[in-house]
Amino acid sequence: MNELDGFRANAGVVVLATTNHPEKLDTSILDRPSRFDRKYYFNVPTDAERLQYVQKWNTELQPELRFSPTTASSVALKTDGFSFAYLKELFVSSMTQWMALEGNTQMDEILMEQLSWLRGQMSDSRETQIST
Image (cartoon, rainbow, N blue to C red; front, side, top):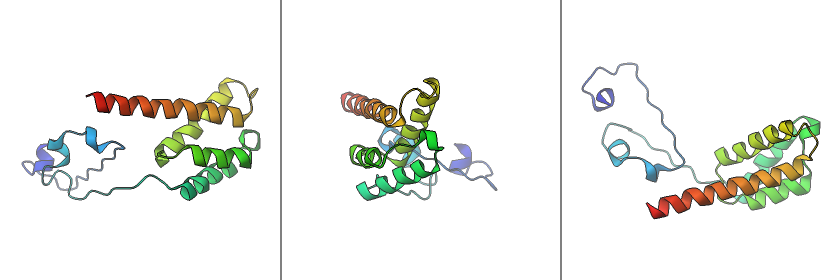
């Protein structure tokens, strides 16, 4: 923090921070002048952007891991409010689950189960924010 506040030499120091929940950060870090000079805010992706992202992931998967176009559309519609980070987690966790099940379950089914799990995790996180 001393480097960020200018009390110590900070030549060559670059600080990059990211968060999906800036409201959880201590205001002394987020709002104090010179700690972070620039802040960029990114909205969650739209339906069309999510569909493109889902389709991109699907084409890059190995053939046995790919899911149907119907599932791709369904995922895009059911992930309203998901950031790109949550979408990536959906695919990574689904691939991990598929491998754990030794490929004995269709990716379409696993993807929808993981989507429900992540949606629940997001809801739990929001409820915790509201109660604190």
